Length: 347
Image 1 (tube, rainbow, N blue to C red):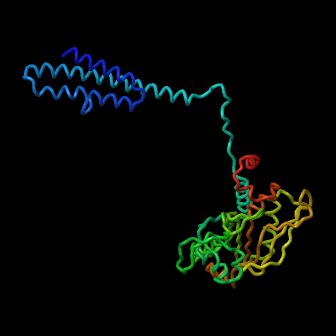
Image 2 (image 1 turned 180 degrees about the vertical axis):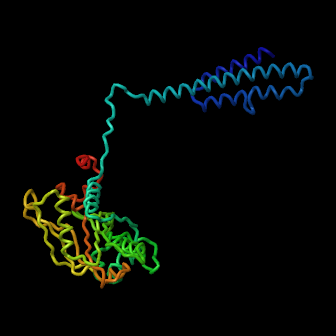
C-alpha cells in the first residue's frame, strides 16, 4: 500500500510540474483529488475494509493527500511568481530614457479676457453677476421686450431643451447674458424694499449659445452684459464708461469710439459701438465691439422699477471678439479646438 501511495504522490508531482498555466494545473489536480480522482477512489475503497485496517489505510491516504496538496500549492505559487515576473518585465521602464516633463498649465485666453473685464469694471464700481445657462423664455426674451413671435427673435435663434416652462414654452440655452440684468435688478429691488435703493451697476459675463458657426462665430461663445440704472444716468455716462474700459483693456489712449444707430428690442435708442486704433496693424479700421442703448421702459418695468423714475443704459460685448483683437487671432474656432500648441503661447 505504501508503494502505491508513493507512486500516486510522485505521479501528481510530475503532472503538476508539467502544467504551464493555472488552467492546466487545475486539470491535473482533478486527476488526483477531484470527484473521480485517484485519491478519491482510494478513499471510497475504505468502506469495505475492517475497522483496524481502515484506520491505518485511511491515515496513509490522508498523508498522501496532504503531500499532493502541498505540491499543488507549491506549483500554484511558482506559476503566480512566473506570471508576475513576466508582467514586470513587460512593464519595465528604461530609466536611461529622458524623463517626461510636466509643463505648467495656464488660463485659457478667453478666461484671461473675462478676468481682465471683471477687474476693469470692478474698479468702476460694477458688481459681477452670474446666473443659469438654461433659461426660461420669459427671462431670455419676453422680459427684455421681445415677446413671442417678435421678428427680432430670429436674430438670436437659440437651442431649446425638451422641458416646458410654466408658460408652456420650452426652456432654452440662453442666447445672451441679458436675462441677468432682469434677475439682478429684481434681487436688488427686493433687497432694498422700503429703503433708499442705490444705483444698479452690474456686469454679467458668461457662456451663451446660438445656432451659428463660422470663422467669427461659434455655437457656444461668451458674452458680457453691463447695466447701469439710476435716477440720473445718461447716454453720456455710457460713452465715458465704455471709452475708459476700451482704453484700459487695450492699454492705449490712442483709440477712438463711435456710436452707430441700431435696433435692439431691449433698448431705445440703441447703438452699435465701434472702435478705431490710430496705430498698429488695425489702424484706421472701424471695428464693431459691442451693442448698447438706453434701457427700454418696458424692460425697466419688468425689473420691478418705475421707468418714469429710473433711467440708464445697457451694453453687451463679446469677450471672444475682444480676445481676437487683443492677441491678433483671425479665427475664433482656434480658441475652442483644444490645440495645446496654440494655447501654450498665452501662458
